[in-house]
Image: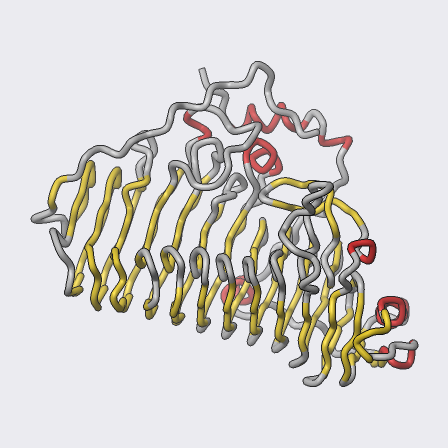
Length: 461
């Protein structure tokens, strides 16, 4: 007999006393949940990093001078630290509460090529907390922080790959914020090499606005965060432009920190390896209440929108609302669900039926597609936990093939006005709802073998 999640969490809690405790996340008002996160307070002091010895010639290591300015700003009660015109070579620097780092338009922060300039700490990587290198710009347990201005933040191309080939340690992200609240990043340009560009973890009330994100990996990875707004940003990335995550396997399931209340609007996406917006595949804390609207997807190596997980993750993906999208340049299609085998299986997976993610209430409205090979690939769903509620309405444009759905209850299809496809527009297996007339039959979806219960219950360690 399978244990329920409450029993699972009771077993995991036995070792919580040995772990660092994160402060409880504070609630925010309904107004802030639906609008902008609060901006940092007006600066009380304004400091220039050159006053602390920064050179800005692109060769001198200015880490100490920049960090001294940030530290002094903090001890004086907070304010703004200014980065004037110049190129500042730096290792890892850390923001403190009530501090904004402002980059002039002609200013650049250049990441050091030396990994010794990035201290080792616990970092979130592929859904686990592991030993790794801290981000170039980071903040931990900080409130009311900002990164503003039209300058550049550039990772060093000498740090290749996402993991060190010699020691297996995760490489530094460009911007990384852990357990922070009232965070804003506005107007800057980020240029990363092979690792993730922007990674908020356990953050509450975060705003990313007018940011240009360029890089060879993910753009923004929202990881177990609440109340996040990403608006008017431009992405050109080598992996998911935006990825929503919440932990992997039994560890993420026991920690139980969902990503929720995320708004993505007025963004332009160009991805050269995966998706414009990826939801998953690390979903073990759950993902819910995601709104994506008024965006342009101009390039994707796979699908513009890709919702992905697998048995062994547990938890849920629910209340996904996508509207007013223009989709072109998607090499495989507009939309895919893969809840069967996406991402690596965890060494300590959530077993049995409770390990199959619960998925419900996916809504796609007012979508305009241009020459996508497949409109919707929605067959990767486990029949033991079908998708409860799917709405596809007001979809127009051109596609090579139509809609393929399996294991879905309460589907609503209306005003599907695409042209150019071959075969049947709608193809289904085990789907109920409205708008399903004249659907061509599909073969049953192949299901992976169940995940057995471990000999001993998982404990955080």
